[in-house]
Image (cartoon, rainbow, N blue to C red):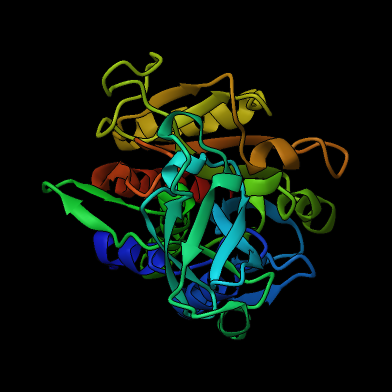
Length: 336
């Protein structure tokens, strides 16, 4: 069985912002190959991994593999780069941080010298990659090269881990762990299950929008992180770190189908898995993009509690990730 922390560290270590998922896709493909009956990559770049048999897809499991990031836009004569964001992220989260681009170039982000801290925009930030001039800069970092934070995953105590891209490499880890549980148990799946590691979720769930029309699943689960209400002066909600995965009830993009919610609650009770319930009024997941396609899909989700989302120090409890994988495995066995 994969070590949960080591698996997360490997996944989170890849630099794969939305629209540039090649690195993480190759890593996941290598990890899941021993468990899969079929693997393919669609036109959008979604990695589709199948288990089970039959012509009908009983369950679609979607976990987005992209992360928030940046893209190089301009190099000034002194060799300093300007950039734009990819995804929903604040300029304050980039200030004084290290970033790495998909071509391996590393840089540090700082603000213009005359700009005050209380009114930053991305126009006020630049990246120092060690270039001597714009000619040198463009040689090292062509316009359009994407990148993301450098923030290696580290343990916080025995049960927690913190770093960049846990949104949503934690969801990818849950899907991979579930695949391994099914494979090692030699589960007899009479129906097909598709694990879709999706692209471009952070810029509008674009990868997920094409899935259901092609696969036509009977049911779909999005596995993603969710906000918690247990850190100081955060908006209160009922989800806490370390108290188990959350069954999605609703978010800004979807109201979970009652059969999907009932399935998750039922198998959780049957297997003694402690679950919470997710209700958030902002943000959404691939479930919202999948639900209204292909004539309508029974969609819902499993949510992994996560602190400090969209920063360099996102934090999850390892036990929540493991219990989410157990919950997902049980749901698949029940349906397929």
